[in-house]
Picture 1: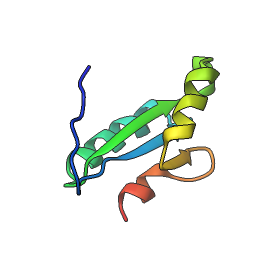
Picture 2 (picture 1 turned 135 degrees about the vertical axis):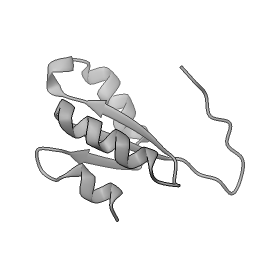
Picture 3 (picture 1 turned 180 degrees about the vertical axis):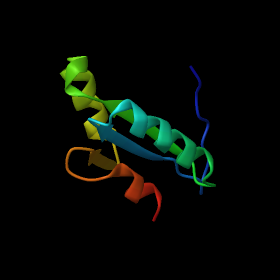
Length: 78
């Protein structure tokens, strides 16, 4: 576990990615590590059965990507 201490003008974007398969999560982890921008990335799939947790993250997320509807890799390639 780690904490972020953030001061202006820095901002860490929070991204919630839904339904990403394991292989895609590995690809995304590599992509994000190679970027200069920092992200807080949360992953959730329906098998986790933690809807209260998911809903809490939805409220704080700047961006929500559903891997069933779009390829999250495209978001991080922009």
